[in-house]
Image 1: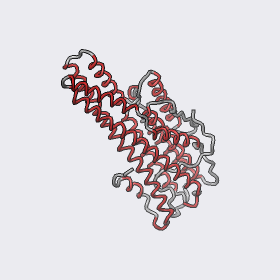
Image 2: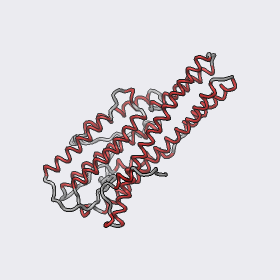
Image 3: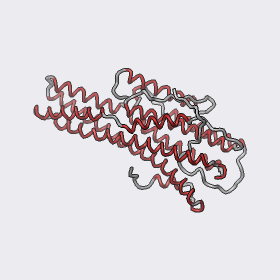
Image 4: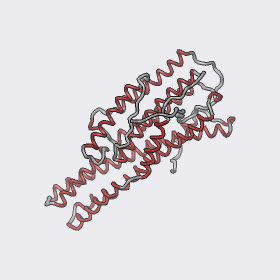
Length: 350
């Protein structure tokens, strides 16, 4: 169970919460309540949509991709909330800025860890293609196919040290999860409460993705939240459902809980057993076809997931760039759409 013992510091995410707005008058308390309720209700809807329809859908790469899209959306929502609240820059503490920069680096590191693991899995696709090309041939080719399949399994078994670092980062973010005390600022209280919801879902999604990529449920996080949040029930339901199914899958002896990867592994096992026995060519061709389809599906899902993680990386990086630009030259501070424009720019080299 995760523990949050240290005072929480703001988890400032993306965009431009530091912009000095022209004074237009403070929203009335009812408006603040409405803004917060709308944000939390939208977050609750987002969380409910993340719950798979059946146990068989836990856990697919397509689900991780959907979750990453949702993270980008909720961070955009909180940026909109910041603009609606019109909190002046004088209300932001220097420590908040320091923590924002630190936390954003942690998110970038998590994105890099996921991207590294996806690249690792993509490299394994070459072994699968080599095996498929050699299954329809003489005994010599079949031996080469066996060698390719053994190489794929060996490649898959190699641990990624970046994922271990990812778990350490997530543990650190959980330790500073508690809400800070905000004095003399009704707007600040609304913002911090909203940021808390964003942080909780972000940590949870990244924890599940890290557990899936590492093929281990040992460091899967269980985050407890107060029932006072409008999204709390939906989050608790989602987290309980996913964590329970992931742990159940590993306890049943599965080598991976990623469905697309499991499908490939299952086909590899069938082919290896067939090559050791007396299997006719028709059956072997059918198995080879199944392997080709499952490996292509895995490759496709990895590509799509990589694109969404890259977008999430861009959102985090755009927020850092926007803030640093402001700190260097307040007069040159960009409009609120700057971060969005940066996300749509050229590919980022990491």
